[in-house]
Length: 299
Image (cartoon, rainbow, N blue to C red):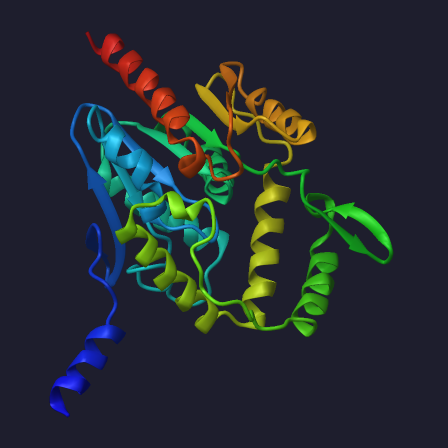
């Protein structure tokens, strides 16, 4: 009986972290840094995406630079936020991570999807902390539309009261996820070990998600999109990596690139939204060219 109980306990235990748990005033955040060099790159994952989803990019970039990932509060091995998770707490945690991985030198900042939106918000607050901003299929503030009172409206242009009203409707209509955790494409491109972590996180997500999370997610998106509507980035080096279709999406990505006088767009062919899995080489080559340029400037 005892061996069976021990086996059950072992199966229920969380897998060991891929990186290190860094204590920030009594709260641990999971940070995974690999490689070395004068340039440091921070990869920000989308939602719901996690640090290990970057492995196909990170393992190659680590050959020519120091490259880090981290998990936001409550994800994987990172402790939850103190109180409710908000845009403010996410940006505060991000700043702690930035200070930990590179206290003095600016960082190459690369964000996928929601991570790219968060990256833009941070770049707006602290542009001097960033040497180059790389946005990977990141959502344009005007892209997300909702229907309210029978009319389609941009989420970024709604008032706080309208969003709160919409959130209450979404909360009332919430139904718990019924799907079985399965490794669907493109996550089947991950190494087997990372596929197991993907399933582990899916199971955790299904088990812990609540109607309040729906409200919180909608408010977070609204706060970010509305705050970024009129933000520009001067001459901050900016590279936008996007899939090749659909055309309206590509146009929205080109609009984001134009937010900097030094902005440019790179098309990642044969890719869906998860470019870091479908075409990691496209991201790796962009990061390689940025690192090489920094090395040339340092000479």
